[in-house]
Image (cartoon, rainbow, N blue to C red):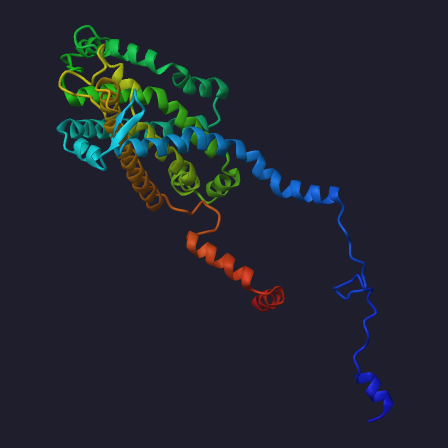
Length: 365
């Protein structure tokens, strides 16, 4: 072996500066304090912007929930702010009361009579407002006007309209040959009257939410469907409804929460606010209010609040699953892939080296 070969095989000495650990020959760049501050600002500022909401939610949301959970396990004395731990006895007492099951039945009846027609009518109004009509702003403001009216005012007005003897509604029914309906006596008709109040207030609100989602749908979809010969109903079923899936889930869940927590309308349906002489329209929130502020038993009221919370959570999850199964994803981004398939595709794409991805793309061509 010659001296030249030995020199060639010998490792070359590093010519990089002593302060360059990478060995690239480039000097190490030291960040100044202002540059580090700018990086921290980019990383931390989004969290600082949204932190007021979470701080406020922790104070007025999470703390009352945890505090109510503790009280529900105690025989609580509100005056002394102390109580004796009784475990789940308060829950057992609530579930053993026939009045609770009557209130639960009434709550679900009013919820179904209000939420289902409300969503159908809101969808119809949103579709009509999405058309090319004159005075769009006027009609949209008119749809939202009932939501602005105070719930107490709505309850007083509808209580007078649905009066058994001198109500306007019974007067209209008598003019067409139908006898008066006992709105404050029969449970079903009282539920219909209260559901009418709920629909009056919330239909326009939900219609504007659906309208905002409809206007976000690209109009190119409808133009292409028209060229292909799709009619109005086919466009609504294949384009509008799939694109509204996230908004529909939001509207259905919020309607479920509001429908199961209904309080103002049944309380203002008569002058006593106790759910009727025979508990015809007694709801869970009315019963909760009566136990807490009528009987002054906040432990049982807190237990009922948690029972209602679990019921709303269960019904909300059922509504979410039903909505996802009924409304297709044809109009959504990502094609017909499920969420799990899209996540798996993203993980595979991140795991694939760039060079291999380029070769695979070239081979697919």
